[in-house]
Image (cartoon, rainbow, N blue to C red):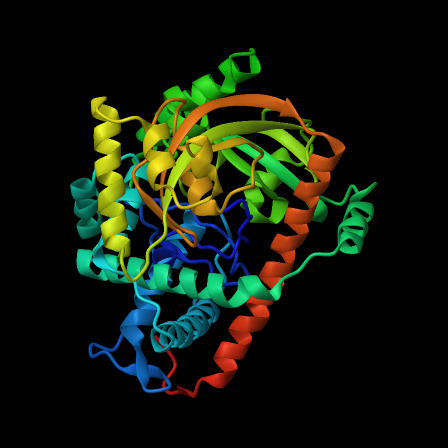
Length: 455
């Protein structure tokens, strides 16, 4: 399980707000119920739905394209990105839907299935990441005009796509020592922003849709007050937890994670570009509200950081089989969790007796792990835990897990560890390339008939 997955693994709600312009590997935050963009509608839209494309024997309708298009525009607007012309974006959305349709057909033809229990778990994860309950999630979906059945079907499709990509793309990628050496050498000495990685933290003071000028002014004053306190030396993470309206700020302290600079909105890059590590920007305005940004880390893309936060966790892994379905594995681990929390069972003992990997002999103990060591779904669940907490059961490509975070610490990486992180980064880059090639192959094998353009 200690194998880093590529950025190909999409967020569970990527079907709702998926990037479409060359960002197949972008992991999108599952933000639900955010203020909606004022999307311009074309003059004189056709009242009846119609087919815009056929992939093999399955149609893609104009309504499907329009529904996805609105969500993409909402996400781009929230991130402060510039919107391309609507007809251009509609074409990109259609191409994304064609590619997904062809991949979903392949997944079903090769016997990949996702049961209702896995969809339930995915729905729980989306709600938890947005710090709401599932009923509240359903209410917000209804407010945004998204039927729950449609949302669950899109979750199911994304799980199908993720499992297909893991199976088809992962075996294609190997990384040699020479490639690692070349990668490290290429990164030395470069100061090009295009090759930089940034970890930014933010405090977002959200501005509601249709806010009055007086409300906007009051919210801007609030943001300026937060900025003054940050520049006076107050802990930025504490300010984010107290004031930020961004999803997940209570757990992350506002940090958005180390990522290539081009994965941030351009307005964030412009505000942070000249700041040193630890620097705090002026108040930045976007479609979502007022942002205060702090540069937590700035480095050349791909160059391993010397200081990292390590996690010490243990888990119980059940591998679905003919004798144990995925649903049954999830139910069994949910029962284990209930017993452990009630004090009637011991995590380590249950791991020794039930876990189906090499960690079982150590009571499920996985030792100290650097960021990026585990697959994203495992890391995301672990990141949400405080020491001593136990996750809900979750599914990865390796099986079904129950995780307990034991402790965290700051550590300085050895040269060998830094090299291993560099190897993982090379692997992720090659996985992105392999995915792009594979997706083109799947698209090329499909019969695609383009009909009337979407409106």
